[in-house]
Image (cartoon, rainbow, N blue to C red):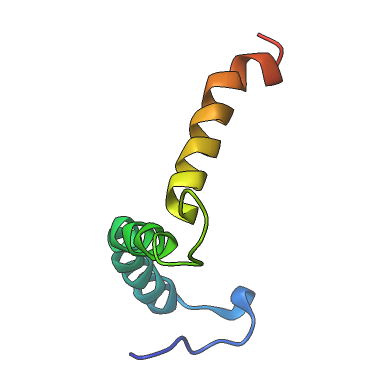
Length: 74
């Protein structure tokens, strides 16, 4: 099977959903590699700034994590 047989999910057969589950499992397993590739791409951007987009993103995420208790009222 290369694609599901239905056009509306309500019409899907068990075999369709088993097929999709396997594809989803494979997709999920590749997530860490896709994330790392996307992050690596952030280090190759516009020149001239003191830091690249990767470092900026990491700084922003770190600051947000440090402020999380304040932001959610803890």
